[in-house]
Image (cartoon, rainbow, N blue to C red; front, side):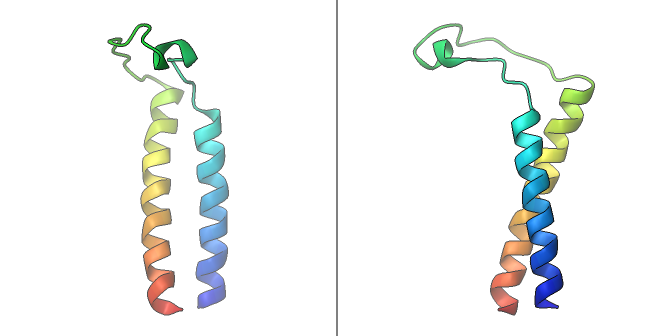
Amino acid sequence: MHTLLTAILVIDSILLILCILVQHRISGLSSTFGGSGSVYVQRRGAEKVLYQAGIVLSAIFFGLSIVLWFVY
């Protein structure tokens, strides 16, 4: 049981890392220091799917981490 949950956690973490790295960042380094701060961007298509997948994968990661904490 512990090995299966750990394997699922590793696969989920790899997918979460890939999902975060593939996402397109609208604001660059210039917005960090005060440039174009109030731009609203609506996600569409693949960007929306990646955003929602990142939320789901992070929730799964958090839940599996808690479950493994209690199992171990």
